[in-house]
Length: 420
Image (cartoon, rainbow, N blue to C red; front, side, top):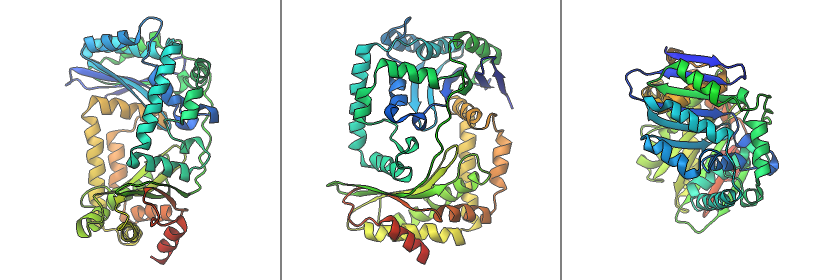
């Protein structure tokens, strides 16, 4: 494997994967600071900081940042998640130094101009409005909030209008000083690169990062429950889910395979039974999300208010039956889908840089391709069924948006599963 890792004296880690057949390089900075790390008054601050990072530094205006990277034919972007925030660039191989210089500049020397801050706060408030107007987005925010009530891990990444309006420069500076520390920051790169040059540039440009240890995120406490928003829509959007496994647990891959087998593709049980055989929904699928200390398994469906009463027991029965009769053929098909996703990431410098950086944050090392493939290949049907059964024993979480009167309550979901 061509992965190389260097830990600098500050604790900053640099991980690269040389892909010599490419002419470009993807590189970025991943920080273990996401929405679950925010204090109550900071809800949405990780996302605001991501926006403000591109609004000007002491050396570059916002326009300078955009023009410098695009003059080189590259692009620059960022994303905020529950547990991490990423800032990344894709450039020609010879411009890797420029990309690191710009990334380090926006992360260590942004000015957070007051007028830019007020303008960007309004942009984010518009983004919150757009999310609220998109029921298949809003329902997942409700699902997380019901699963983890009154906790940062259950709060929307965008924050609320009230929180966003209250943010000021001092709050951003405090958050940066407390969260953007070298020990929880990864510089990751993949493509046409030389590891030593990336290390040299990172050491020089990220020296200003604080070196003290960042405060750990509070442990998640799954509760289950329900949240529903009644709206006059043509469809009702529903998510029903359960607590599942952290990515750090040995059975994590079994839970992933179970979700894929049940509702991960057109041949899955959910798709075949709900859509193909009965025509109850256009969109239906299952999912499994792993976090550092917990996970969520569930399914999403959108259907008419007349058909939701029929769809829900059909979908729940598909999942309940799978824990006792999921076949070897279904498991092998889901395993093949996972392996294709893994191998596809190895063929893209953008996906690969993200993969290796996230693995360093999660596990302290990069997992080899063969190691992951073996974990997937070695799974038995019994282990996959057991992972699904363990999730269904937890308290149900129900979220719904639209004409919600016929969506089952968590108690009805539990009772149905008990009978099944």
